Image 1: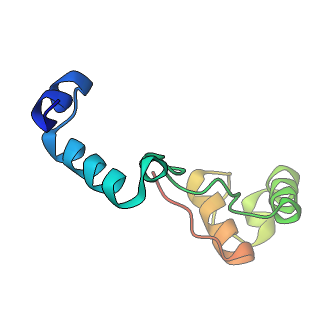
Image 2: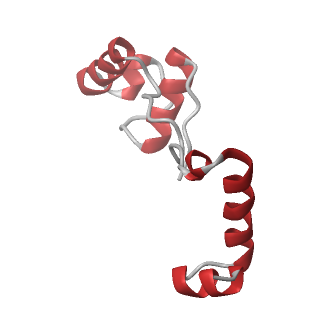
Length: 92
């Protein structure tokens, strides 16, 4: 089967098939196995710090923790995590 035919059968581009052929010729069938994809699955905060952060958020208002907020908002939690745990969190 040609690479063009394989691309059509598997619904991928010819470039993908070409890459598969190259990997297979260099490393055999094992080279075609995919590894883990995406971000590593590790918590941003270790368990003890995560529990401490939850206790801080549920046990006090932001102004009691000397944050410039009256209520817990996403921004207030970002400030807390940055200040007390050195963790930068996305605003999305």
